[in-house]
Length: 297
Image (tube, rainbow, N blue to C red; front, side, top):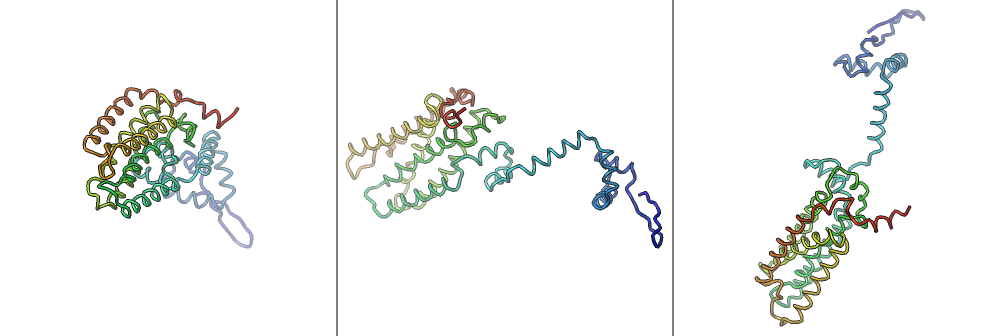
C-alpha cells in the first residue's frame, strides 16, 4: 500500500492501493490476500475507484455490465427447472421443458383429480372384472399431454424453441419422455389403488403407448393438435363399438390378451414410422398457421 501525510491536529497516514495492484485487480490477476484487501479498500475510497476506472479496459467493463444486467434480468428458475438442472439437464433444455404446459401445477392437479375420481368410481361401482372407465381414460392422458407439449398453437415457448440449439425431433422426444414419465407414473399410482381388479387394472399401459406413438407419428402429417385429436377420437369410437358388441359381463376386446398384443404391435409400428419421419419435426417444417394467428403482423 502507498501512503501520504496529512496534518490536521496531528499526523495521519491515508493508505491507498498501489497502481500496479489496481492494474492487476482490473485484469483479474491480483491474488489473495491482496485481492481481499483491495476489495475492502475500494468500497470506501473514491480516489482508488477513480484510479481503477482509469486503468480498466472500457470494452471489458462494458461487457461485464452487460453480463450483470443479463443475470439480474433473467427470470428465477422454478422448482421443476431447478430440479432438471440439478439432474444434469442443460440450462436451455431445462427452460424449455419447465415451460411446457403439462408440467404446470394446473395440469398436474387436473390429472390427479381426474384419476382420483375415476378410481373412486371404479371401486364403488364394480360392474365387471375390469375397471372399464379407468382403462378407457388412462391411455388418453399421455396422448393429451404430448398434444399440449409441442407446436405453435399451444406451446408458450415455441418462439424460444425455434431459435434453441435443439433439433425439433429431439425436443419432441425430450418432452414426450417427460410427459410419459409424469402420466404413466400417476396412472401407475392409480392402478395400485385398484387392488381388487388385480392385473386387469394394468391393461391401460400398452394402449397408452400405442395411442401416444400413433399420435406422434401422425403429427408430422396432420399437426400436433389434430393428430392426437383424431387418435383419441378413434380410441373412444373403438371402445364404443366394443361395448355395443360385447356382453356386459365380458372383457372388452382392447383389454383382452389379443387386444393387448394388437396394442403392442401398433405401438412398435408407430414408433418405427415416427423414426422415419423424424426430420419433419424441425421447427421450420411445422405448419405455422396457428402461430401466425397468435402473432398477427
